Image (cartoon, rainbow, N blue to C red; front, top):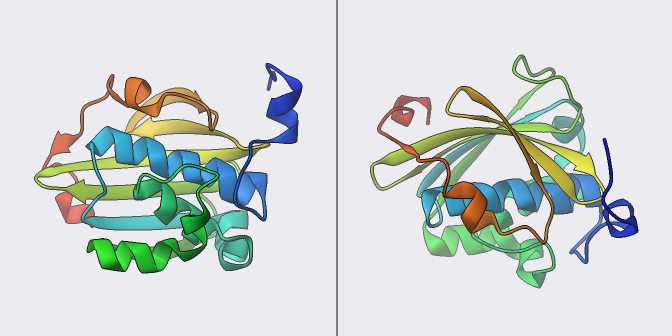
Length: 170
């Protein structure tokens, strides 16, 4: 992986404790938020490997939900994002698997999210230093590198959620 600046290595200003298990994961959730145009109503989150083992201790669950709510990496509400999700009416469930068949990386998640009559299935990995990568959208391989300072709205505008395609997956 090629870094653009020393700040990619140091990581973004963030709610911790981990740039890979927290900040990078917020970016994955925020990308999905922008893809749908708002907070999803229902979400199924599958954590693999390292994420599945340490998600609560590193705040990976709160980070992903925070991103799905539209929060940025430095938003102090991330620490209470599970409560914010309930207040916002978001239904979510977590599942845990050892290995991901879509992508081989220890910090992998696959999120299926529904909003109105649209749904998306997104695969993402957190690469460290607050950087992440979207490797799949609706079963289609992609290679979208994310950093906390990216314009997620512009990035997400190139991909349209499917209407009712992945509803049964939630």
